[in-house]
Amino acid sequence: MLLRTLPDPVPPARHEIPPSYISRLATLHGLDINGLWLQVTQPAYPGAGRRIVVPERLAWGHPEGVSACGLTWPDD
Image (cartoon, rainbow, N blue to C red; front, side):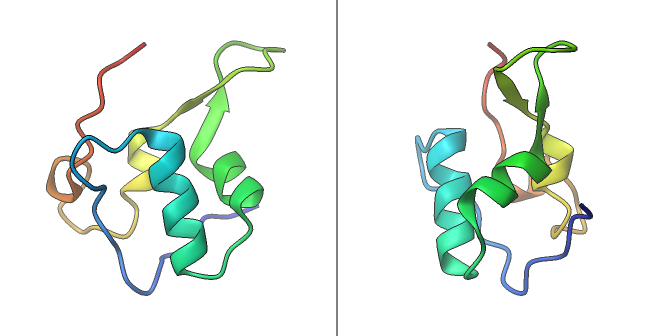
């Protein structure tokens, strides 16, 4: 599954957590929430059920990268 550029990149809301942001992006662009979640996350470790967000995958629609789109979530 390849990431596609979203037609209207939207920054996260103030104090928004990653799952909420991903859900909002999917809804705004008419995408499947679970499909988008799988595209922008990776397993925490091989074989893990828990997934972690890869900020670079969320920032693909922003030419300036992660910092320009407001992705400043702390690591777990």
